[in-house]
Image 1: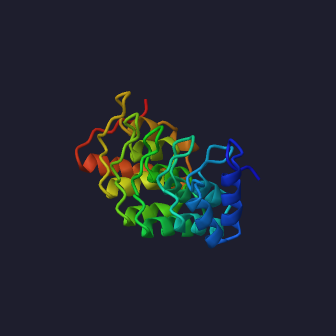
Image 2 (image 1 turned 30 degrees about the horizontal axis):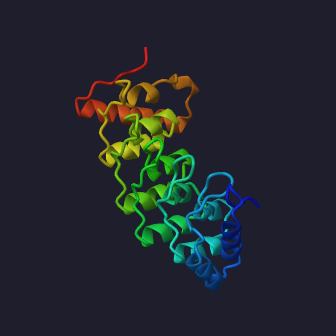
Image 3 (image 1 turned 90 degrees about the horizontal axis):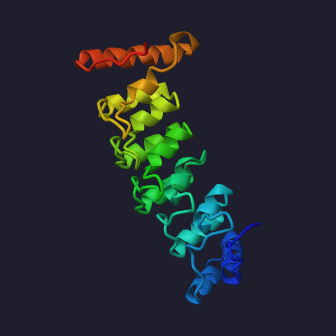
Length: 217
């Protein structure tokens, strides 16, 4: 198993002790200078690595030892971002219950955990983040909103739900586009029945509010 990128013996010992659930040894190692936020060879903090391999015992032990849920990996994600993508909701539930911010930004692209949950199409963690107060109007560093993201990945049902939750349909990214060019890009005939229904719902929603529909030519 990969541990710290520099093969730091203290970090490797900490990772082993955490995986064994040896809280006393973890506390001793941290007191002796081991860093609970050290990264493995993939650039992931130990807490994130525990989530990714489904190691609940290591995850809990590292949290109890003071691991920072907002520490960024080499890709900019925090532990909240990683937890938001997992099928097991226990990781995200634990982090949020401990006060981890639901809108923690990715250190490289500015995306909040909702972007990751949406990318993973993880209905449960999306709901958990929204219930925790995550902003539906969050933007990434390029000015793209969750609506842009949902439209881009063809998550049509979430386009509808985000609009109904207060997301701004007129928000533009740095290229000057609203969510609509991506949302209306595909021809109707290639869409599933659900996607066609969602498209018509959005079209009607926009028309009812006097917002021009940027339908594809």
